[in-house]
View (cartoon, rainbow, N blue to C red):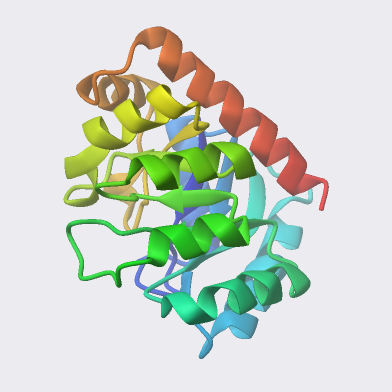
Length: 217
């Protein structure tokens, strides 16, 4: 498994990063991105702390650890600047908290994250054709998620991604050890979104490519 969207106790997860990575190792993970929630208040501290622990854990560890961030509930007008700042601070993966129907995310958030060139637009909800076309052009990945609530629109997101050629990933958005998934669960989530086993294999390849790029940063 390669999972590019998870949370530790540095935001609203329940585990320290080291334990989350160990739990992922037991699940058979190959690579994990730690992407705690951040806005202007904690962006620097989150990226600094995750970068430090990733460097430590990558010294001989079985799981490759990526230091990332999920920019969350950012007013759309501020998104471009914070995406740029996250990259300046060393975030290897930048995830945008999309317009999930499970939360009151501000309209225009999807468009702002796509135009800012985030790596992953997480749980983008009832994504539009215009947003999908823009994401395909910018190389922004749409997330298919195993997380309850956010997963309600997986089928719609998958259909729009396939129609307009958007790259897809499957992530857990794990906040607790019980949220981590194995390959069998990942495939089931993909099939539940009306995707095929071939689509699932493509998502895994997309994750491999994106994680390889991130680890070179």
